[in-house]
Each structure stands twice: as structure tokens, then as C-alpha cells.
Length: 113
Length: 292
Image 1: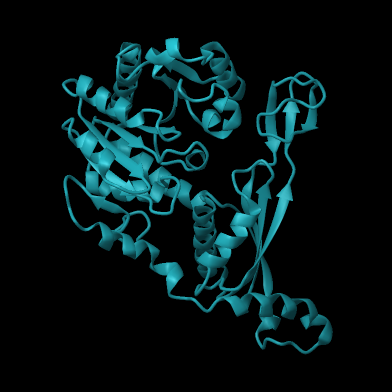
Image 2 (image 1 turned 30 degrees about the vertical axis):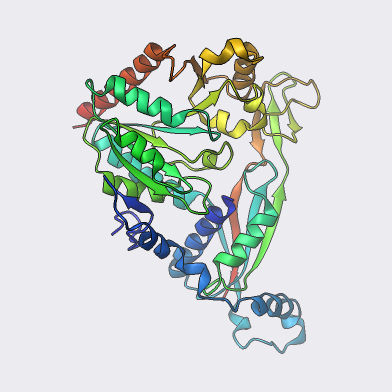
């Protein structure tokens, strides 16, 4: 259940940014959660709801943007879609691939008051 | 209380050296948060609706909605943890403390390996240990029996150690300069992979009583580790574990991973492990002396 820790990280960033960006309430948070990242979106939603109660983000909507896994296959010399972080290339079935996208866990933007 | 975060919590860490009876107290602080605000449900629903219609209707439900704006952040969710990890790493580097973070499933023999290592090597250099478990002080007690200082961190509902907890543990443990610090993570092959604690190396311990395809099933952990210790090899004659295949799987996920085969109880392969440890401790101290 490390989504709880991840959401604690999100809340901490919201609180820090509140001073920098001068807001007192967060209405929505857009998170990029890559399909190959270590977080499960449903758990993120549940934890976010629990951890933001009584904070500046109480009741804020969590918008999760899923990004697909994409890797560079050295054999094909091509960007290929991947379903597993270290899974084989769907074109040549080789494993000499380097993940390029889909593992991000990132706050993209907020709607604030 | 907390130098890095100013969180004011003595929390997380339960005791330094012994048998304090404060466990319950310390813990309550950490979790105060979620409990006292039990009225949150209705908020969620009100919210979503008011946004959609507000601007087109010209009349807003919320008086302050007109001040709503979008703020771009683009910040990694783990950045807070990583900041704590960087602070831990600086603390350790300044003191020439070589630090490893042991990760594995429960029951791979981490604590046995740590206790054996300390017993065999404590004449050569000092050790201290941060023990992470969901609950109990048992592992820290096993380590203290070897003569090394140990701090137990109980994560409660948490499934991993994070850098903030380890920062507090370091304050309590106050490890000697030029010592070796072992951090034994919570037995879990998934969650601890995401959390940098400030260690020099992650070591993943896999025992031959487990499945040889664990590197493929839990690839994140094997990708993050620099060294894989294949433990309990004295039991191989009684098992159908294919060592070569297991190592090939680990290399598939992480071509640079180094692999040592050993038995913490029977003693096979320990010399090579001790060489690995000694060489890196020497390098850590040399780096500190160069910096000063």
C-alpha cells in the first residue's frame, strides 16, 4: 500500500506550492501515473481522499492521466509500445530495450483558489 | 526535531538501544492525521458539479470560484522522498559511512545474513543497523545480540521504509564515522523499490527456496539493485531451483547486476561477500578523506 506514501508526497508538494504560488485551496490535482509505474490508480484515489481530509486539498478532485509504456528497441532501432517494464519488444521479441515512457509518477497541474 | 523536514515528530522511531516501552506513544503521533476529520464525504460531491457549470451560467455557486486558476507544477511525486534521501546521503557521505539497503521478500534470510556478517566482521569495522518491519522489535533484538547498535522502525500500515523514517532513525542511531550501516527494509519485493533511502547500494536477497523467476515477476526491485545475493545455496541439493536460469532472469532485467551465491547459515560464499563489503567501505572512506 505504498500509494499512501505517494499521496503523502503529493500533499506535501501541494502544501509547499501553496506558499510559492499563493493559493489556499486546491480544487483539482492532475497526476500522471504511467501504466508501468509502481502505483495503482484506484489505490491512489482512495489514499488521496483519505489523506487530504482537513487539509487545503479536502474534497479536491483527483484526475489521473495514464501514459502508455514505450521503449527504444536497440535491435529494431525503433520506439515500440511495451506492456511490461522489462517485457520483450513486440516486433522482434528481443529484450535489449530501454524504457522511454510510461513509468512516470508526476503532478502535472492543479486547479486552485 | 526533524532537521530535514521540521516535522516536529519524534514519532517513527521506537527505541535506540534497548527495551523502551514507549512504542505506543511514539506511534500515535504519526497517524493523528486521518482520524480526526471524519466528515469528509459530502465535500467530494459538491465539488465536481460546481466547476462544470460555473462559468457558463455567469452565476457561481461558490463566491470565490472566480479566483480559480490552473497552476502547472510538473513535479515528481517522489521528489519529497528524494529530498530526504539526498539529506541522508550527505550525512552518511560526510561521515564516510558505507550504507546498504537490503530488500527481499519476507523469509529470504536477511536478518540472518546481517547477524552473521556482523558477528564475523565486527573486529574489522563497526556496524549499525536500521531494522524495518511492520511491527515488533524482534529483528533489532537479534542484531543487538551480535553487539551492534540497532534501531527498529515499525512502519505500522506502511509496506516499506521511506527516507524520512530513515532520517529520524539516523538521528537516534547516530552511527560512527567510517562504520557500515545496514538498512534492512520491510520484507516486500514491490514497494521498497520506489523509495531511495540515501543508501550507496540496494542489495536484493533472493533465497533458493523461492521461485527462480522472481526477477521477472518483480522486476522493479531487481532493476534497482546493484547486487543480488542468492541465499541458502546449501539447500540446493534438496530443491529443483535452477541457479543459471535465475541468474539469467536477473541479468535480463538488469544487465549490470552483480550476483553472489552464499549461505548465511552454512557459510558458503561468505568470503566473497565480505570482500565486496570491505572494498566498498574502503572506497567510501577514501572518498570522504579526499573531500575533506
